Length: 316
Image (cartoon, rainbow, N blue to C red; front, side, top):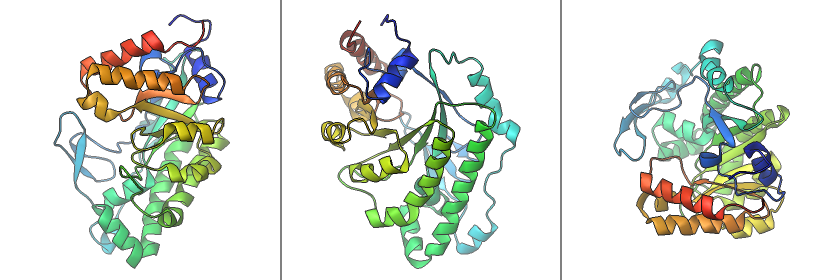
């Protein structure tokens, strides 16, 4: 896609709701380069830095959590959160950042699993976390605040050495048709912690990106107020046309090609979803990507690329 604009300029146009030259797609146009700090938030198999044990059960997915370190209130008192050295945090970030041409690509920090996810992983499941929040809300406060402190320490370590354009957070809050919890529960336990993370990103002058699986659109007004610039939410669960119309110029949607279609659909179905993304993104506000970071059949990724190359240009 030859153009006078660089991929960086093009994706920033889309994020700013200015007409892009083409539908940005970091997977294919190199508009975003990801870096990850040297803290292991999960593994395909084995133990991560938080003490969660992972096991590979599906070769097309990723590790599944099978054991956790906090099995009682006494375990929480004894638990030691990860505290990687500055060198370990920075080494993989600097290695990638040195080779990125910032005139061509945005530099994005992938900052790992979110507050809610990490909390239930540590205690051994969502039902256990919800029960704990009812019986001992102060304990859940302690647990989540500990996660926030680790994430802020890692973020501050990276930002002290590297200027990033975007910080990526993820926290799965939804099922296919509704939230996993009440909005009231989210506002009590999750929102104030995420606000701290977003504030640190905005103070650094970077874009704030949030991924969440499931139907989460009722939280969008508050997420925008909290500082989220880009939402990676599934189009099959959330009404993208309505969101783009209602929040025009206020938030960008990232994704749009269903993980389910890429995993199990035909090349024709993939191409149809790409074409729909192209139409949704003509005036900006859309960055095309798979709906989730999983492993997909190569023929469907190639179908996605072909459809994007054929239909994704807006102007010369």
